[in-house]
Length: 200
Image (tube, rainbow, N blue to C red):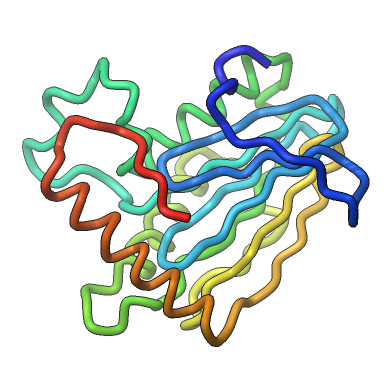
């Protein structure tokens, strides 16, 4: 679909399909037989699909919502999804509907929100509280969730079928992800205008 040309794509021989890697601040929608993949620490991803039409997608966000007057100048900025879950959710849902999905048929699976940054504020818990509140307010059908805990996750989502697979990551990957999230938060704090930041 147009608009997603910048995302990294590669062939996954284990699943015999193309795979699209979604990084923090990105989302992707597809009606093809392919896989969407991401790695989550304190971030959250929503996997949303139309159960009848085989259209779905995934987002990946680090912060739940803007605080105070921060929301002001972001209305027309492409990179807003890089930081705020409310924008990431709206963009993903709107892209699915634009591709032919129907709101009444949408099903949601949510993942992430681990407390991997033990020395910092529990961003993961804030993300979990936000995504649950958002989905309840929008009256969207939540089919599955794997949220919280202290370990990062690798998530694989098949948008044409709605199937999702999640695997906890432990050990060395844990440290790499924590360092990446610290750098990402620092860059967000120091760069309030730019959107997408590559972590992995």
